[in-house]
Length: 354
Image (cartoon, rainbow, N blue to C red; front, side, top):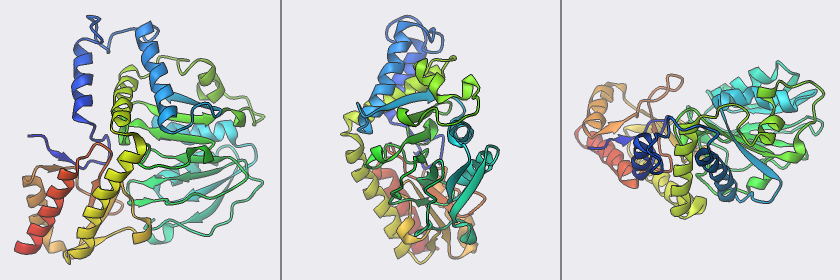
């Protein structure tokens, strides 16, 4: 029986994507070759890369708006470095909402001054800061849209006259936004889009070449764009599975349709957390993530019993991150509502028999 997978990443993917991807490992597109062994320069894979890049822009409603999409190596962690390498001349502004933005700040400080406009570190990142000022003479403003570890999510984004950069690794394609507000979006595939190994980068071309430093080829967005995301051997299999997931997302009705389903799942689990006296949410209510619900037991003496209940129910990946403890239910696009219902039933069983 397939488990109910609440893992924060690598994530659950649609079952049909698993089936299509596994078939391609044996025989890709009736070629008698595996997707793992075809040349990345072959027309077959070039077509995969082109479709994946085009479909990403289509789903984000950024076609013909001056944006380019790339599939690169290194995860979001590499983008912490590349963002600063390509855009930080003198100083940049960062919003610190958790572990990943803290790491992005660390990398940026190698290249210039970093203005931390606000931070929620004072409460272990349980909320999203509000009413902060962004210096208009900064080279760019960087934020993280969703925080997997702490279960917080930005519900709105600031209006600013400088380039807006966003790490959307854990909520990309999960909710409808005006993506044209952003000059650079990056997202590790393994949270909501595909397997580990690929990173989607969506960049507005007119913000390129603004720094005076020389940029190594592998770190240059301009080089990767000029080479159609094929400057070096790309993560072939990860790009292919991401394409399959993007096709699935489009067939499901696109981002708006998935957002409706994601809201329903989030409301179900948060209603139970707030109703059930044995549980307490970690994140501030107004900033709760629709992707990652973090919560704790109100009585730690029940931990052993609850852990046994959810494991016996076929639930996987529910343990919280060590920074927060407790539990974390990650509810990415492909997680069915039924899995959330099973978790809620388990929480109610603990209440009834605890």
